[in-house]
Length: 135
Image (cartoon, rainbow, N blue to C red; front, side, top):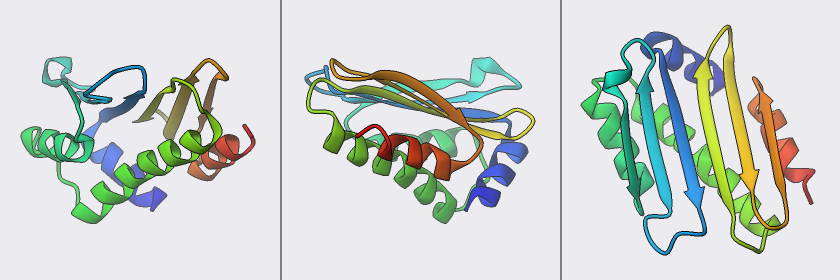
């Protein structure tokens, strides 16, 4: 799966940001796709349907990605949210970012009344382990 992500980012030179904001009453998610070659092609939207917006942005920017990789990537974000929901009972805000620099990097930033932390890794397993170790 990670190799497919790396190919995807290398081919498209984009940065993807998913944000969950539990302090909002509606439109709890923000989805952003930034074309790193042309920041005028950056798309951002607050929504309650992040997967649909993510798919729309991919189509809008004519990004070549299979539905399988697209769904796997989005499910990674959802799995992080589910794990964080189990750990954090108060207003949770977290941001999950991915981009290719020299290698594919994943960033997570968590802000709540209980925890405020950031973590970066090029290994998704380390991101998931980081979340598990917050307990």
